[in-house]
Length: 434
Image (cartoon, rainbow, N blue to C red; front, side, top):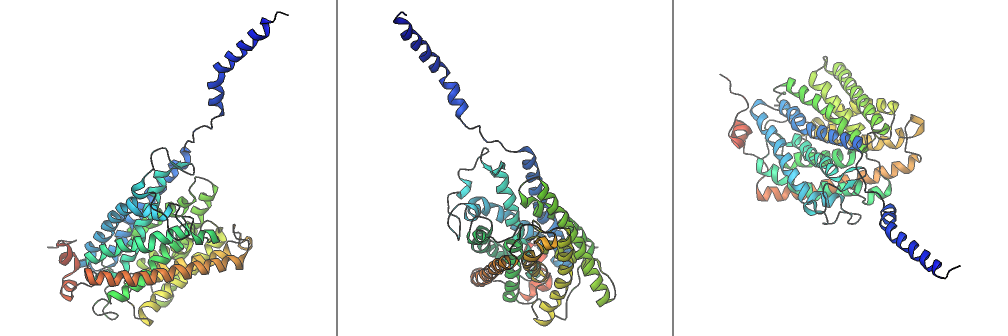
């Protein structure tokens, strides 16, 4: 064989390899991650639904429950809180809640959403959608607290309290439970906010109601809701929006989201009927405001457990919510003499706590649930989480309330309350009657 042939063949093979190298290199690279269109569409929808819960759902629900002369002020509170929470969320709260950090709080690597663009994913949908979805939770949580101090708290104090509370209470607790913090590491179950939303808001509402003081004439001179029809409309919006709240927290359009939506609806319906029956028996007539309040109780109570219980568990939770929250409303106002005006603690706080405890039992196979194997072990984790979060919320609220009292003052004057906060605080009236 000619000695040149091996050299020539080697040269040809070398050139061919060099020519194919870019193709081989490209084939070795992992394909760029792309968002799942179905999950993305669902999370966009869920985000809209949760925002709908506050604007206009919660705003109308609370506004209809107060006196006519204070109805506009409640709308102003909910709308302003939505704006303040949104700005704080993108500047600092998202980073404190979901950036890596440590077991207690996230670091500052995501200040101003630094490093988050259109191509960043959270799971298999854009991180921008996750940011917005979680923002809606940060909006409604301080919005819930409004119900405890309506008709008597200064608007400036509401704004200052909201800003400090979101930084000191909401962001750390969110990190503990959902952001990789110490409670998540312990295995706490809280799909959509029984701890993060309802326990924090309910506890802080009770403390703040005590610090602001009762309405003039409480408990004898209680004023009935000025527009029960508006209450029902707002409550219906909450019911619909809650599907995004709970089923959206599965972060995917899948069977788990479907089951979560189903049990959420069942609990709301059973809670409504339970409250109505008890009110009918104790007061002689079933009321519209009562049945929709039972609905809210059923929804708040199923929230932490909605990812782990089945339909049977949802029926039990709804019945427990309607009964326990109904009687807690009377206990808080009549026995403890605390003017939690719109029953934030009795409905949201007690409901969230109750659901957080019940999931340890109803999430087991015995009750056709899933995800809970060690009932007693899970119960221990749930109780530790509740104890820590309730204590943190209470102490922080006291400190924030003291700061607000010094800086802005907490309570409106008797003259302003007599005129109504609509005119006294905002110079407007919700109704112009001839």
